[in-house]
Amino acid sequence: MKRTLTAVSILLAVATAAGAETYTGMHYISSPTDELAANTLITGDGTVVTVLTGGSFYNTTLTNVTSGGTLIINGGATVGDDGTSYTRETVRMGTGSIEINGGTLYGSGGELGYGGSTVATITLYGGRLDISSACRLGYSSGATGTIIQTGGFAAFAHNLELGYSGSGKVIVSGDSTMTIDRMLNIGTATKAGWFEVRGSDVTIDLTAKTTASASLNMYGTHSTLAFVLDNSANHISPIDAPHTSLAGGTIHLGLDGFTPTDGQVFDLLKDNDGFIDISQLVLTEGTEYIIDVQSGWTLRTNETGDTLQAVYHAAVPEPATMALLGLGGAGLAARRRRPR
Image (cartoon, rainbow, N blue to C red; front, side, top):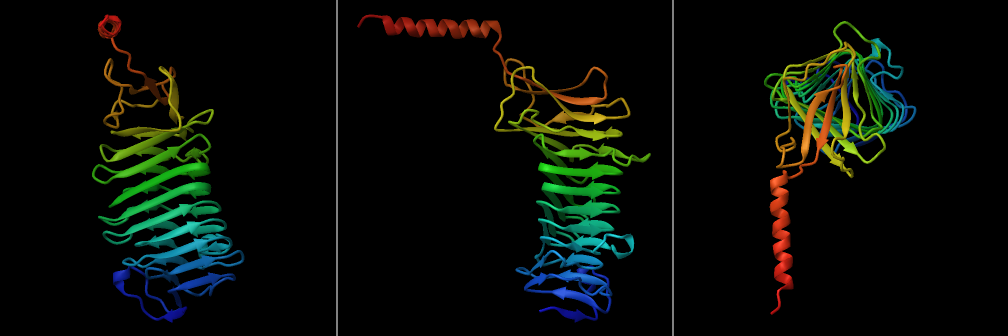
């Protein structure tokens, strides 16, 4: 049942205000909620609030810091039905999930994993995720924030920060578009961040509204930029960035239904400043090419020096090893021909 709160515990990290809306149990929203409600709190394991076409939440959409509520958006909008700045507040999530199938989730900012040890996930199957200020995944120490996009449009008008104080992960696949107008920060010197692109239908664009500070940044061993190549014609969509700062980090390369040929080259990341420094990057352990030992990858830049590329190499035994293998095969054949 929906009820009116006059106070919310500081433990929940929710601003106290009369008129806040709290939901427990199952609810379907088919019309705009009270515009004067200061916050919307979805609380408790098993709580599911579904926004239908014509429905909307105003102001903050939240989940309880310690429980696991779920918001499902099938149409309409949340946090302001027109997305104008005066109706937006921060999308603040403790442990809980938001699923977007249609419609739009608007927010002035994002704080996923608000509270230690919390786990917050936004899954975008369709529709739109629209955040006008900084979005921080793993907001609190020990917390985890994740965005999984398999379709639709995700727009970040400010920084997208993975591993703010906890850990953050973004996985983008399918016919998805993601734009980031400022910085994409993947991890920090001490906090883990993982950004993954899967397949060639994805569009990742950091150049739509280029500002002086727009950049893709990696900071060290806790930063991972992952690419999973599929069996489509182009195999992977490269990321387009106005600038890159790659002060260490890991490039992870995976395969989905596809095996590259020896010497095949794949563009991964383009720096529109004209130069990309990959000297501090490493490959995931066990995926690197070792001559005469294992097939794997090497990293390089293109001829103009502005694009990070991955090259696949098939391990071919050296001539002496091939000769020994040939002698072994000949000996085995001779033994089989020997009369008994």
